[in-house]
Amino acid sequence: MDLPKPPDDPELKNIIDKLANFVARNGPEFENMTKQKQQDNPKFSFLFGGEHYAYYQYKVHAEQAIINIQNKKMQEHAQQMMHQEQQQQQQQQPPPLLGGMVGSHLATPMSGPPPLLGPPPMSQWQSTVPPLLPNTAVVSVTIETPSQVPMQTPQQQAVASLQQQIAIQQQQIQNQSGLNDTQIKQSEQNLAAQYTSLMQQQQFQIEDTLEAMRHEELQQLAAECSVSLDDLNVTVKPIIDSCTKDAILSGKSWIFQHCTSDAQTHLVTKYLLRRSSSVDRSLWPYNGSKTRSVGQNEEKA
Image (tube, rainbow, N blue to C red; front, side, top):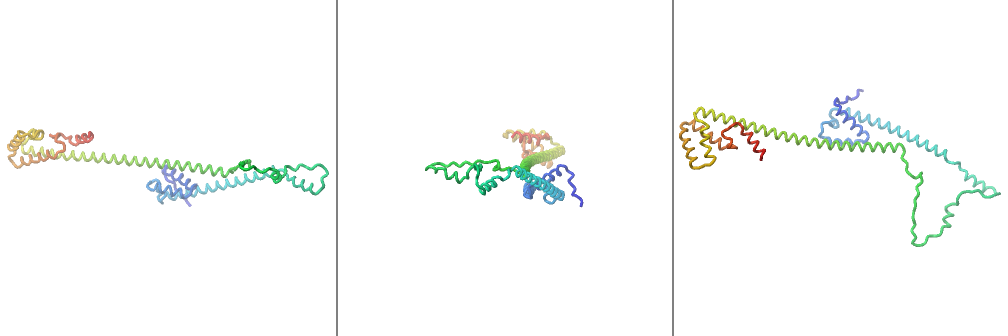
């Protein structure tokens, strides 16, 4: 049976290998937690049956087999150590001479001084201890001997070390995941800002193009009607600036003198309509920089 092919991308292979190791050590709960956090991340599509799913499953089973072998070796080593400790304790214990001595003295009459058999039992001591006085506090003191102190076996120490490493790696994964989320949000904000800027520039270019086409149309119409746009600008400007009675009469007189045909009337009508609908009337006569000036005004605002 052919082994699944690992991904060509070294970064993706590293992600799959590390995650497979963690899942093998921590169980399927760790895989479910990773699925919830990375469900929108395309790099983790292999968790949902995408490409390289077979390689990921192969790595999980391989890591589990390695861990099982290591655990088995540690258990065997721990059992050997416990067996050796028991043998050493048995060798260090003295032979049970006290029972034989007591039995021999009870069986035969004593011909000499009695042997030393150690301190009397606690029952005799307790019978000679005077009773406590009323309202006397009793203090309980517990003395721990070395045999009572819990000792960790090599297997327990190895398991504790592995658990500590797993906790550290899980914390590193959480920190990296939080950092990735922050970077993704910043990238999305930057893309949104760039899109807005491009749309504004595109709108400015469209407005510039339309304004240039309208101005060119007026120039062609003015050339056909033999009317100077400069003279028309000079006539209309006082009306826009001051709107006095003299300026209005002067402009009216100029229009009556130069609008003697339908084409000339159409020219003046389009000109006045364009002037009245212009965003910035200070730009007249048109110099091709309307949109750029509008952008500068918006930046100042």
